[in-house]
Length: 429
Image (cartoon, rainbow, N blue to C red; front, side):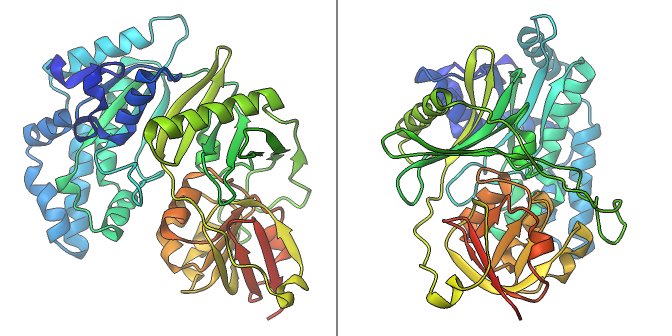
C-alpha cells in the first residue's frame, strides 16, 4: 500500500496522471529548487480502490447518465459513501505515518488538500471547486479530511463545473496532498503575466483562504516587466457583510473600510516577483500561484496555468463623461449591461442574462451564475481570488475590491466593466 503514498520530492510525484496537476506542480517546483512546504501525495489509485471497496462504482457511473432527482440521489450516495466509509487498515497505516512525520515538531499542524486529476489545467482550473483542510491536529480530523477530499469530487458545485466543461466525474479521480501547515504571517497569490507584460501580486495577513474565497480586499502589488515594484496598494479591513433583507443580519451603517499598512515591503515584493518569474520558467507557461510567508521566507503552495488577459477596448468619449470607480482587475476584456445590485446570495436568482452583477462578496456562491453575467463588480475580493480565476477562463470582465459598489452603482443603470484596467463606469438608466 505504501506504493500509493509518495513524498512530494520523489520523482514519481511529478506524474499528473497519478497525483493530479496540483500535486505534480508542487513536485516539479521542489525539484527545481523552489521553496515549497514539502509533504506527501496519495495516488488517485487509492481513491479508485476505495470507491470499488465501498461498492460505489455503479452509483458513480449513474450520476452523469441519470437526470434530475435521480442524478442528485446518486451524487449524494457518492458523497455520503466516501465520507462515512472506513479507510482500510492497509491504507490508513501509511497515511497516519505520514501525518506523524509532518506534525512531529511541537505545535505543528497538518494540511490535507484535494488534487483531482481534472483540475489545474488551462481552461479548467476548478479554482475553489474542491475542498482542502488546514490546521488539522488529531488523527481523527486528519482521516476525516482525506475522506472529505475524496467526497468533494461529487459536490454540487464541482458537478456543475464539470457539466459546463463536458467532463464525467466517473472518469476522473481524486488524489490528495498531505503537508505541514505553513505558519504564515502573510499569504496571497500572484499572476506571472499581465496584458502589459508585468506581474500582479496579492497579500493579506495570515492564511490565504480569505483571499481565495474573496472575503477580503488584499494588498494589490504591481511589478513591472523589469522586476521593479511600481505600486503597492494596501487592502482594507471590513465588517462581515449582511443581507439587506435580514437573512444574515443587517448591514452596518458605519464605514467598514480602513487602510492598513502593506504586508510586503519593496524588497519582499520584488523577491516574490523573482520567484514568480522562476515558476513561469519552470512550468513553461504563464502561471497563477498561491504563496505563504513564514519566519523562514516564502513558500509556494500552488501553481496552475494562467489565462492571460488581452488589452480591453478603450472607453469612448461617452463613457469617459460618467462616474468612475476603481478596483482590482480580475477578469478578461470589457463588458456592458444593466446593473443588477445584490447584497446577499439569496438575491442571485434576480440576475438575468447579459446583466452586470454588482455585489458585496466575490465568493464561490457566484460561480453558478457567472455564465449569465456580462461582467461582475464586487466590494471584496482581489485579482488572485478563485472567482477571478474562473472569470478569466470564461472570458468574463470582473473588477473586485470596489469600495461601496453596491451603494454607489444604482440598480438598473448601464454599467461598463473593464476587467483589465480595473475600472467601472455607469450611466443612469
